[in-house]
Structures are given as C-alpha cells and as structure tokens.
Image 1 (cartoon, helix red, strand yellow):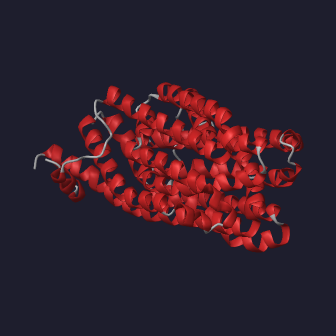
Image 2 (cartoon, rainbow, N blue to C red; image 1 turned 30 degrees about the vertical axis):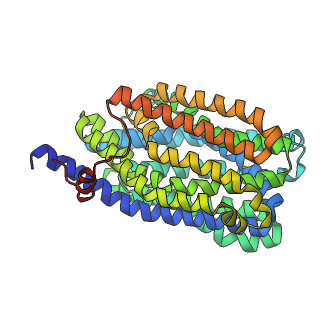
Length: 446
C-alpha cells in the first residue's frame, strides 16, 4: 500500500473508531430523549405536552439566535488550530465565543421575559406564560453548554461533547420530571429541563478546563473580527434550520389547540431518531473535514465523506423501515391521543431518510468556508417551509405541518448535495461497490 493509501486508511480508522464511540453516546442520548418525550406525554397528555413544547419552541428560537452560529466557528477553527498546533488561536476562539454568547443570550433572556405575557395574549394561550418564563432562564445555559460541547468536538473529545449536549441535560431532566410534574405540572417539567442544562453547563466548563489545562498560560490571539465575519452567515443558517421545524409549531399553536402541537412535536422528535446516526458521525467528521480542508487534502476528504455516508445509510435503513411500518403502534406508546400523528411520523421519517442518505453535505460546505452559499440554501428552504405551512396547516392540520417540514428538509438536503458536487467535485452518496465497502470497513484504501 502506498503512503497516500495508508494516510487515508489512518483517517478513516480514526473516523470509524470515533464514530463507534460517539454512536454509543449519541444513541444513549437519543434513547434518553425518546424516554423523556414518552414520560412527558404520559404525565401531561397531548394538551400539556403541547403547552410545554410551544413554550420551548420560543426558548429554542431565542437560544439559537443568541448562539450566533458560533458553534460552527468553534468546531472549524478549533480543529484547524489543533492540526496546526496554534494554541493561541485555540484559546482565543473559545474565550471570545463564550463572551459574545453570554452577552447576547443575557439580552435575549431579558427580552423574552418581558414579552412572555404578550406572547400568551398573541396566541390566545395564557397557559403557556408561566412555563415560558421558567424556560426562558435556560436560554443562556443551553447556548453556553452547546458552545462548550462544540469546543470539545473540535478537540476530538467527541464522547465528552455528546455527554454535554445530549446525555446530561436530558438525563437530569428525566430524573426530575416525575416528582416535579406531580407537584407543579407543566411548570415542574420546565424546572427540570432548566436544571438539566445548568448541570450540563457546569460539567462542560470543567471538562474543557481540564482538556486545555496545558495551554492555560497561552496568550489568546484570535481576532474577534474574523469570528464575527464568519458567524454573520452562520447565525442565519442556525436560525433557518431551527425555524424549518419550529415555524410549523408556531402556526399550529396559533390556528389549532395545544393537543395538535403536542402530537406533532412527538411525531417530529420521534422521526429524528433516524438522524442520530448522522449527528453521531458528524461529531467526528466535522473536525476531520476542517482539518483535511485546511491541509488541502482533497483525496482523503472525498473518500471519507462518501464512505461515511455508506455506513450511515446501512445503519439507518432498518430503523426507517420499522418506524414506517409500525408508526401507529409507536405513536400509541405515548397515549391513545397520539395515534393521530402516525401519518405525520411516516411523512417526516421519509424526509429524515433523505437527510441521512445525503450525508453531512451542508456541514461540509460550512467547514469549507462556503457560509454564504449555505445561508442562501437554508433561506430558500425556509421560504418553502413558510409558504407550505401557511397553505397546508389551516386545512390539513398535523399532516399539513408534516408535509411542509418534510418538503423543505428534502429540498435543502438535495440542494446541498448538488453544491458539494459543484464545489468539491464528488457526490456524497453511498458507495455501491461491495469491494469498496469491504475496504472501507477495514479502513484501507488502495
């Protein structure tokens, strides 16, 4: 085997090993998330779940805005700094990202606290005001914890990153949900959710300090102008991606009863089980993409991208088949009222399958510095989503919301896939050759 083949094999073995570890962590987080939704639905029913998820939708929107897309910059620049052993940049990007995010989320927290009563009147749902106030205090902890998780991901500490981002907050909330919901209902669930993210923030801070203790005396050198220039496009990408799910919830909340919001949310979150394979792999792939792009290693990049998508596709197809075939039974686990979302679950499961089969195409564009192009793609997908939500939800309810979310998601995935082909010269589609698959699983390429 030549040197290039050995190098590619080394990169792929690192991705395979890291993905296996992250797969287990992400799988645990996905299971805990599913269990949290199940317990929530059982305790509060469709109406109570709808109230909680509607309030949470506002909080997640403000949190995403306050994060300013900095998590993408952290992964990208941290991975590049590690590859080039530039410890000043590593420290600078972290410190400045945390400071900017803390200020932004602090301002947005105040705005949402002052607006909670007005939002309740606007949606004619006063019952969401109290849980919205409680959840608003989670904006800063969620945003900062996710930035710390992104920094750990850039350092290739993927298991710790997943622990902060998915296992700890949901696990802690799950432990608290039953006693708190029994006493305070929806407000109790909101308190448990807030507590989970506070714990995740504290642990994430400790883990990052320990991981970078060897560079404590390094002078930070990263220019804040570079960070803000990159985040300008990334913040809209983050918000657009979030709104493609949340806008349907806002329209349902305004035009329907809270039960529809609860049923749709459970269906949507259940369909996202399919993407945990993609997100687990992304924790390894994104730092590797940034590293290979910074080193100009196009051949390794193509091999890694295509073969990683092949493995993800093989893992997700059986799960997709089970969800589509048994959608009614799965939704029935949450309660008899939730069976009305079986068709919505099927529709969104198809969209998530396309998302996985397309691979991390949009993320690759961002790691390659094409933030403006990705922003344009997500903006177009959001426009499709908004138009379809307005046209379909008033007439078809939950099913219309599912079609709107699914169509915009598929549109975005396919457009990103096409742009990767145009800019990087290869299709991020599963490898069809059995020989290529065998060599991929062994981490060898000739």
